[in-house]
Length: 356
Image 1 (cartoon, rainbow, N blue to C red):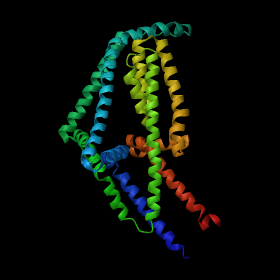
Image 2 (image 1 turned 30 degrees about the vertical axis):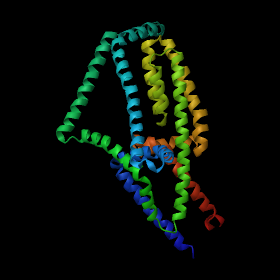
Image 3 (image 1 turned 90 degrees about the vertical axis):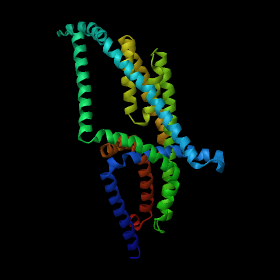
Image 4 (image 1 turned 135 degrees about the vertical axis):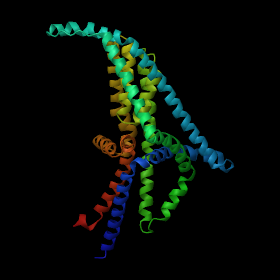
């Protein structure tokens, strides 16, 4: 019976954890910018520590924090500046060359369909007019929604502007005072639970560090591969699309899909349909195999120990709970949960309940 206080102790902490989880889920929309800032701060922390070791105490910490955040923001602006012109360029080309593409499609499919007894005639100019009308309608509807939001109270605009301002501010303070915040949180831990929590945090930090390093290597390798593969087929925008596809793989499946869509759009506008289809099949088919069966298992999966089925479930579950941000944090959060399950399994195997 002497172990009953231990069970009450763990039950109390389980109840506290459940209540905190419910509170976090309820406040998810408010916490989203802070969560994004926390993820970025965690990724930038190793760079900040290296700069501190390199510069020593002669350079104030806040200057190093500003340097890290400035470098990150410049890279983000460069990434957006690389992609946005490509999107506008391809959209303009699509509008002008849509009749040509539809004519090629008509010439290719019409004989095949006629052999099957189906007679379909496409009207390229009519389809172009419909697309133009629908595009303008979507643009006007979107602008009307934004203006309505501004008239009502500016909820959409204020939320967007607020997040754009709040994330860099939160990132600065997390980089500047994050170690102090962790120290204060540690002081609140019960003395009995402190060794367990400290060991758990260290193990989780090690697993997350392996995940971040592995993910960066995967992004680098895939960026080089997609740029090289698309360039070999002569795609004029191989560099921006290849870099986007490689860097966007940190969002599982979304990055690959966006890159494939942009490459398909550019390829069919520049090349013959057979050549564009062959490019997509070869480059993105091999790229997906390379990512799924070589790079991710070797550089990430083996380091954090997540089964592919667990990865798929984590993406769906976190996406359902937190939306797009949930997809972003699914794998690192699952890695932390894996550490917790390992600790729980060790305690279960050492308990009298398991021994009988």
